[in-house]
Image (cartoon, rainbow, N blue to C red; front, side):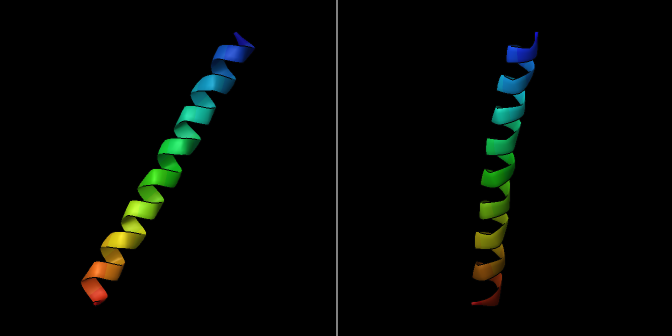
Length: 32
């Protein structure tokens, strides 16, 4: 159970990082 939870958390963290980076790119494009 714990391993599954940590795996899901890691996936969520990676997705969050991807979303944040994509948001930053969108903001950059808007200001450029």
